[in-house]
Length: 262
Image 1: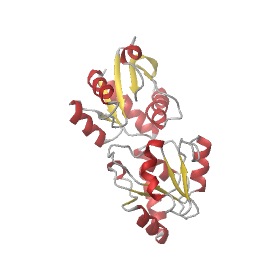
Image 2 (image 1 turned 120 degrees about the vertical axis):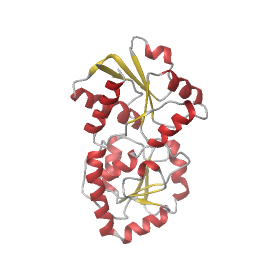
Image 3 (image 1 turned 90 degrees about the horizontal axis):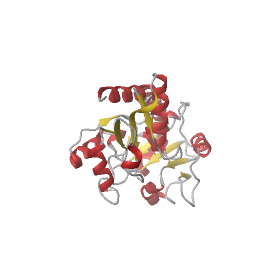
């Protein structure tokens, strides 16, 4: 069996988590690049142009776009693909609800190195796609020493170097959640890998990580006044994340999914 992942550039988290890292891990398992399987994600492409020459096609859905401008694209391609994959149980539920397809859930792997647990308020970090800035905007000016990394003007742009520097500087991460409950746990997982406690809003994909779920400002106060407990929880979360979301495990999950559908 051989597999081709198509993506839209490593600057996109989805490309790294859903294409670049899985392809690398499948390569370690002896799976080469070829035309047995094509893995397609996101949008801004046409089915007929992409699938020529491939035996089977997997549509990898990592965001809930089953309503709005891209609804037709996601609905039609989820129905015509030989297999549908996704990165969270909640998004799998939505895919079933919208198109009646059972999606294979393969989580996003971590990509950050593991670093010692820490906690302080010299820098409180939020990072994310520009579409998620609406979630953090109510806290700008309210959270002291808030640093924002995002790919839009007015903020520190996302680059691997800027992200590394921001993680190194930060003593806490905040992730208020928005309307979509179908997002993966990757931002919290990457923060835990870098030794950081996460204060977040409710999101099903964060439920197994043992961080603080609730009011963001209350969570910051709690974390800074319970530092020994925070450090202990980060260390426990790191042990869990190290194995549960390892690139090796996720690569094996891709191999199992593709092999069972061949």
